[in-house]
Image (cartoon, rainbow, N blue to C red; front, top):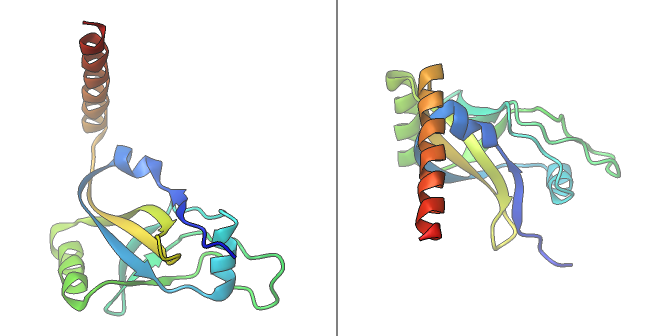
Amino acid sequence: MAISTGRIAENRRARHDYQIEEALEAGIILHGSEVKSLRTGRASIAESYAGDNNGRLALFNANIPVYPASRDNHQPKRVRELLVSRKQRNRLLGLIRREGVTLVPLSLYFNDRGLVKIQIGLAKGRKKEDKRQAERDRDWSRQKQRLLRGR
């Protein structure tokens, strides 16, 4: 059996709604039926976030649908623990409590060894005018590239 690698789910809305200051990779504790469901490519992290769960870092509200051929299925939106080093976990939980930073999942994927990983971004919320300005900047950079290519 070939190990599937690649992106499972992506939160495209996160980069629009938040200013991502730093991105980091974390492991995730899953049940067997969840991994089987992810291998079929069905998951959603659009409404999910990471936060404190009794002193541990956890992923909330991520939807991994049940695997149809399994008897021992999981709950689709259960809380899933994230695996990071103790030092990193303490730093992230401290930032959440003190500075009002949000941990937003950016993508869920299989790494080259076939393990499920999640990319989490340290994010601060954008206001409406900030979103508009970011869109203007993106459009202007695209126009600059087109003009430079035309020369």
